[in-house]
Amino acid sequence: MATLHELAGGRVSAHIILGTTDADQQRDGDFIDKPARYRRAAEYFQVLRLWLESKTAFDFAGEFYRVKDALAGHRPAGGVVLSYGGSSDESLEIAGRYADVYAVTAEPLAGASELMGRVREIAGSLGRHVSFWFSGPNFILGETEAAARHKADEITEELLVARDYQERRAVAGRIR
Image 1 (tube, rainbow, N blue to C red):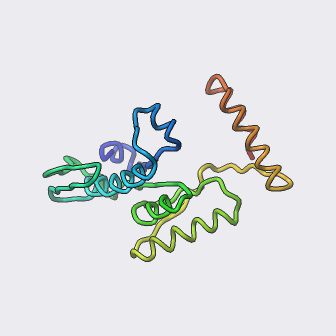
Image 2: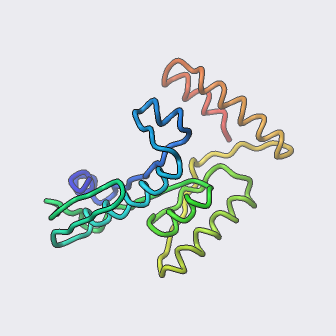
């Protein structure tokens, strides 16, 4: 990550993904339950930060990760931006505690504002600042929230059955 950050002129960021459903995770060989995935994500942030920022060797012993006398051979100048998303209480806590950027999930505006406020509160209580970005520059609008959700569901279904990249791009082009 540090090498890529350097080659990209300091523009690398990493979005840490917890995973969605147990079934999705199990398809990828991950059989721990969601509460454990939250604990693992928090621990991963801690270890990753140490690797990216420590100037001296460090030890870490957690529930999921253990390293001894670890030190990155190359640290990224200026730091890598780490982002995280999710709307559960656990996700908001992780974002406020560890992320540089909170990826706001697809929510009605009032819901997004509430999530951002909660992340700000958690980060502020720890003397941290978290920035925000929205998971996609596009919006799906409708006369009512129900109409917008219906349109989003239709687009999602079309994306799921799209056969290739070009077809997915064509469907995604309808999102505005």
